[in-house]
Length: 308
Image (cartoon, rainbow, N blue to C red; front, top):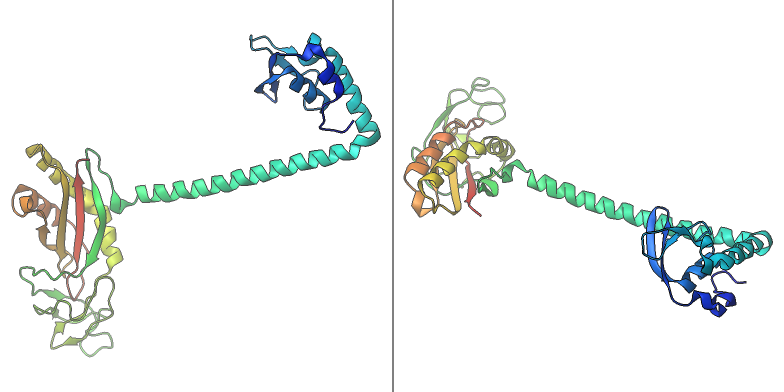
């Protein structure tokens, strides 16, 4: 009898007409299948005589004890025994090998899918927990990552002296960002954009005491923003309490002075260019501390989103 084919006794047995069965294997329930299919599974060795089956009434009985299948269970066991003992040992090994290969392939696919899913979740969690995109609850959250650059906006009192401790005049590092300078370095108004850009710029030239290159470190500024931005949230909550219709994005931009303190603030929303919200934000920002630096002042652009 060729494995995998249904023997004639199944087709010729009227006791196998009709009927639907559930069967339980490895702790799981399968089916329903009709009586002829169930008998064929016995002949193929896919079910044992002790396999529990049920007609769906909740009662489970070994298939080999049910009247329609008693004879077929015995015949199937005898046929499989002959197959194993005479011609089937090698075929059974091949069949098991194929099943094992399929199982290994399925497991590999699951591992790959799990790895991809894990990487996606990690990336998403990383983005969700980015301190620069923090959600403060109550409908207040960061709308965009803080951007650090050099603005063309004119800040009041744009001429600032920054005392830098370092080697004396004439030393190799004098007048550069790396070695500092003796006395004070002055930034002349109107020099914005001549020697610097956002991020860490190269050392600037100092001529006549005037520093013309930007020397701020964007990464350090971002770190301070990520650490301190929560201090601005009470200002937005207070504004929401004053104005129940308070909704939308509120973009702000502030300039950092050479002494590492916030020098000025712009609120790019006509409603809040002046007033309680701007005053509150400015007061909170004045508590932030950045590293002092010579050169052009950086600006930080940030947007808060209020409401859904």
